[in-house]
Length: 275
Ligand SMILES: N[C@@H](CCC(=O)N[C@@H](CS)C(=O)NCC(=O)O)C(=O)O
Image 1 (cartoon, rainbow, N blue to C red):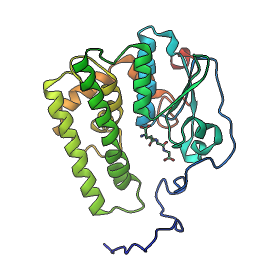
Image 2: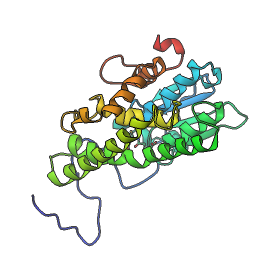
Image 3: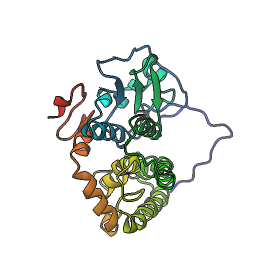
Image 4: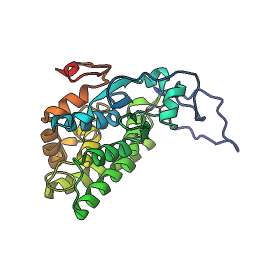
């Protein structure tokens, strides 16, 4: 391993290589003018079927399955590899230039919501579903929801980045983030040993937030890392992941804005698009 000596002041003058080098920049804001399309439904989602994107489409499909027709939505594709997240219209919905981003056009003025955890909480409150009302259960649900928002960057931005996307395999960051990822899986495993779902005996937005990441990991869908991380050790996480995987709304939500692998569905504008 060659040691890197940081200069006194960091400057953005080198291509770092790796999968995301061409899209990541140290500057916020729009790079080009581009209005976002608006469809016919109350909710307009601008997203991609990454784990963060799937959280929202799974919740929307679950709400529709419960009969909340106000959760009808258009899901527009944001190609982050092409820089769509830096278009002026997208930046107006999410100044942080990351999917998912939601516009609620059901009221007199459109309401923007960004950050997947905020979108889940907003929708769960709006429809009064998948979010317990009893204070202790609600606190548990929020605690796990925020746990996910704080933990997933170690899994995705840390472990996934260095294990799967960095231009070369480096032992130090892979070790560090593999250890943290396994610790997080053990946190979930111990919780799910004593609780059917993450926040208790009800399926909530905490499950919907955590499943695409940690459920995906133990199901071997992320970073081709199932063997490396010995995911078979986390039996309770696997039991929970399989139970959620079997839900029809989850199977529908996972497909929306998918542009690789099987059963692709780049955009969703009608329930029948998924049938
Ligand atoms: N904390 C954010 C993270 C969103 C995020 O990282 N989105 C990624 C895709 S999963 C993205 O849009 N990346 C584009 C980029 O980094 O330019 C959330 O949960 O909504």
